[in-house]
Length: 213
Image 1 (cartoon, rainbow, N blue to C red):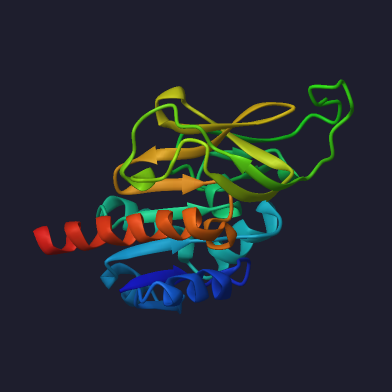
Image 2: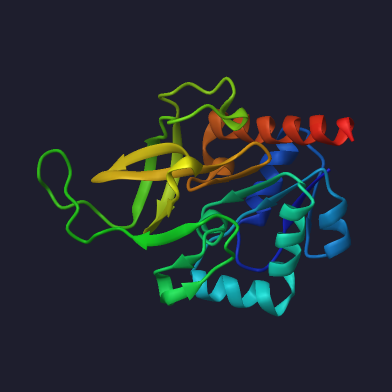
């Protein structure tokens, strides 16, 4: 079973619907015991970094997330969940979880497209995420596969954590991690067949880890 972290700052229901469509058992929960007993945990999020960190801290879920990582329970961050897995966010000048080293930064207001036109912030719509290194998370997903993005901030982790880079006025990191600990900037649950494939890949990895124990 996959646990979807419930901290009132996410798109938990959309993630649950996507998993259910794949016949993947799942539960939306804020219960620490349930989260720590799950085969894997999905950490979604929409909204602002400061508010999200307050909600996590007030519920003790920031500590639970660190326990999940320490116990090597597979974890997948999505959108805001990706951004606040780093050490600091420019959004509200917020100290974040520090699961990955690095910062979350706002897109520059003067970004331009290939025609020299100012581009819209937030970045909203479909875009590819070409990989910079191999990852189980992207198994059988084409390099030109497109995913759905909605964000004004992007992650800037250490280089060895970067898995994929997307172009929007300038290149930005759109997926980070290593086997068992991943985060993506795009909304996998809203990204059609390739987003569903990514969620399926995550679940299959979780099952392999669980069965090996």
